Image (cartoon, rainbow, N blue to C red; front, top):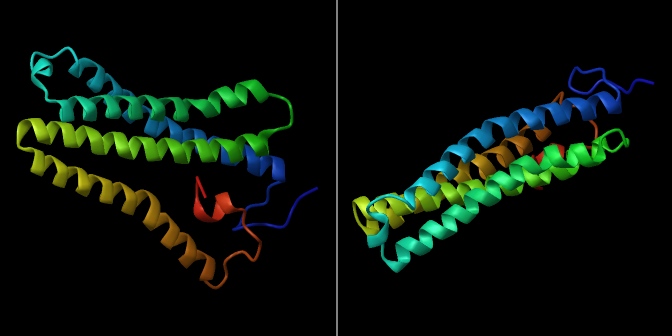
Length: 178
């Protein structure tokens, strides 16, 4: 049984779930690589010659950032483990919904880890004030591009004439995490 076309697609709910999961996994592949590079950089940093001279604020920033990078890595790999645990149980839609939330939390952790990394490096190289300003800019950029922009585009697309007249799930409308 086929459902009505949505945005030019003719696919069954199962086909849509498979496509959504494949698209989500592709997004996670892109972000996971960045997290792994950041995490490796942070791990190596602890063994650098300058690390012992970091002040308490810098050490706190380092540890917080390291934990955030680890959390992002765990959240980005969790969908694969979830899929493996529920494989062939007819749970693809649930896997997609939960994985979408995990990806959203992973992006949040990644954004904070990137912000913390920039804060630490600029603080050490330039000054604390410059580090805080750079971190604020990074945080605003991540929030603007990863949260605000997708939500605005989703609202604009929902109002556009000729857009499919079906009720979208919260995940489809707002993107992961909403």
